Length: 195
Image (tube, rainbow, N blue to C red; front, top):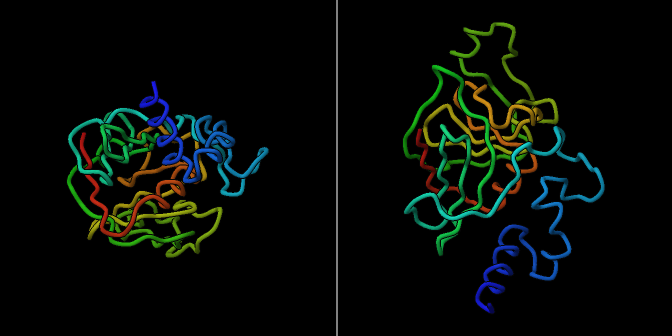
């Protein structure tokens, strides 16, 4: 019983990034998908995820700190160790834009600007050549760049797309969830994308 309580306290600490006492006080917002800023704050824009961030058993044998993305399931797992993982809902590439592989996070940006790739602009000539960072930017509040690919794990101001296959290959999260993940990982983090 003591071991179970200790695990729960550690899990809440990991999920909220605060002390166990603080974790208990903020339990509703972090597990319920609501804002972490109190009330109905929408500081990051876009609202809460339709898929609640959850502490789960690890989906496989990955080193602690690894990000595992299951595109078929439309979930991202941050491996915590001791058989546990933090699971987030994600949006993935639509038909014809799926991919898999192993990369590392090579850069992290807060409120990143967006330069649509040439391939995307060829498909969508109405896109701007560049869009500065901000609440209207499709990369959202945070972005983590994956190796030399054109892909990122990034935020979105369209929470209704979480759980859907809608992107051109990037992994979308709500702004709240991507900010939470961004604060937990560093440049060099291994990202494994599977189907």
